[in-house]
Length: 358
Image 1 (tube, rainbow, N blue to C red):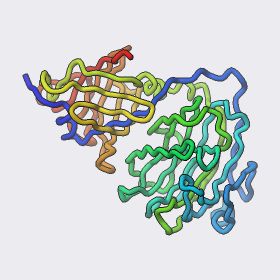
Image 2 (tube, rainbow, N blue to C red; image 1 turned 180 degrees about the vertical axis):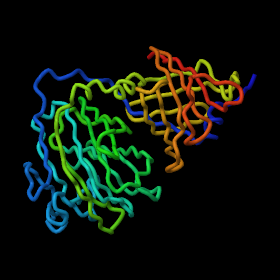
Image 3 (tube, rainbow, N blue to C red; image 1 turned 180 degrees about the horizontal axis):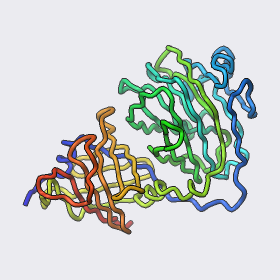
Image 4 (spheres, rainbow, N blue to C red; image 1 turned 45 degrees about the vertical axis):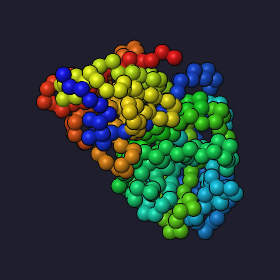
């Protein structure tokens, strides 16, 4: 029988965890938001308001069929805010749930903190943004930042996006904002769910800027912007349901590595909160993650946060009531296990966890 620390074995695979979840709000029974879309074909068709406009740094003619915003020095969260050319429209009824989507072309940031993406905005002290930006890691990543009453909170997801074209989407449910990205405009992967505000945002739109960390300018070409209600399928998104079900604190009741039980060492806990997921033993580790509940078995990929960008650790899981079972590959970017079991010699990290009752 093997004794030791499960966390040590997971460190060997460079794992750390971040999960963002909160209770699922009830569906609104009132009519949804009428679709609003701007394709930027020679003119602006929506009633855009530009915060701190600088006409020298945006154009519909530079790249026909696109709104081109050139990033420049400026920040929202610093006081006073200096970020220019925040393109925003009013939310017809902020109490409704909605989906925001945009496609950004030819944007591969090269200096911190060049960024472009979606913005939900009440004022300069209260907003949430979902952007691709150049980070302190030394390459572009995905990042969601929320600020409430001058208190900004960032949730960097160290996923390197090397393609110049990408789609960003934010789906609002109550005061929760599901942030997803796609490389083809069809299949979106959720990287975070962030609680923010009271569920009644005033404005939504686009942002492209540098922050206060760089002076170099870069064009962000927005192909379109769309605001619409959630579809029935999006309301019943299984990814959303799984994240909701995982919220809470879990204690490992059985642990194995390489098929051998771990019978000694500190207890293992998995703590899932709206803004984080922590694997706790003698130390704490955090990772971002994605799930695929349609796969058999259900898939999970853990994305290291503490080491910068690295390949994910792939695994499978089962969630049945208050019991959660995880089986993880021993190798970064290795194939996910085809079963939830582990046997001697397979190298897998396996644990069964029970929900801790509040």
